[in-house]
Image (cartoon, rainbow, N blue to C red; front, side, top):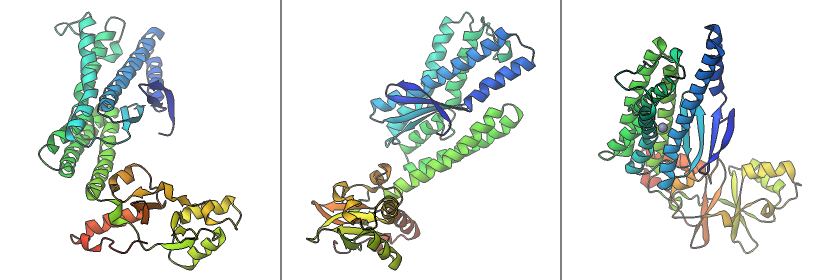
Length: 371
Ligand SMILES: [Zn+2]
């Protein structure tokens, strides 16, 4: 995420803190000074925020370590003023895995809360209230206990995509499809988000931010779930484009550019002198190469070689997740070592649009001859 500061790497995961987090520290300094607090009181507040920050990182590592145990890699952890985010390379497939990964973060806070409660000099019968303006050395650990208890419970509220919402969706997915479960969890999440925003306006501006975050990320994730459900079980071989214009490997990039201006093709298969397909060239590769190469450069020097081909049985959802297809990159599709055609993201997006538009979508799948 832009504007994030790298803190270090633990358990192979990079941890970042977003710059907006420091607004929080500056806000506390400013508040302390304007209330005429002593330097030591302000110091205790900053130490408290940093301790909460550490507990949030530990919460994220709860998700990360459980994910790693189940075989899911994490890209990074980002700490924002409203909490942390662990970005997994891939979202868990099974409800059981999603349940375990989601619940482990709040559980970390609850375990920290229990430990702090045990070492704190207060007990539930004579505890100080959660009033951070009264923070001092004596009640520091107990207030940290209260914050961890709140963090654990708050994150278990079933407001998808917060942890509790994911736990809720995982439990629903045991009985209904993942799309339906996501729809229901998102709807419940939106109700909570609106509640947070209304409460936040009166009591705490952070709740407003959390509410907005829930609304935006919930709609984002439901569309990802929808797309992967529409692609479920479909392979590259089903969608492969077979009507590809073929150009000889020795055609120059200047002639290939003319070909694009002259017709509808935006990408080509490249063939050797024995008329065997050896690679692909898309409009984007061609434009890029025009910037740095001589106009007489032959296509074989700039093509995406066949060695980058994907087997026809590759699942479309894996192809998308792998980022092998950025917008116009044309990937050759092979079957038994022979190239049968090409595939690109536009192709897949068209298929999604057709599948949504008609229940008879199967009749329009490509069934042409191999190229
Ligand atoms: Zn979490």
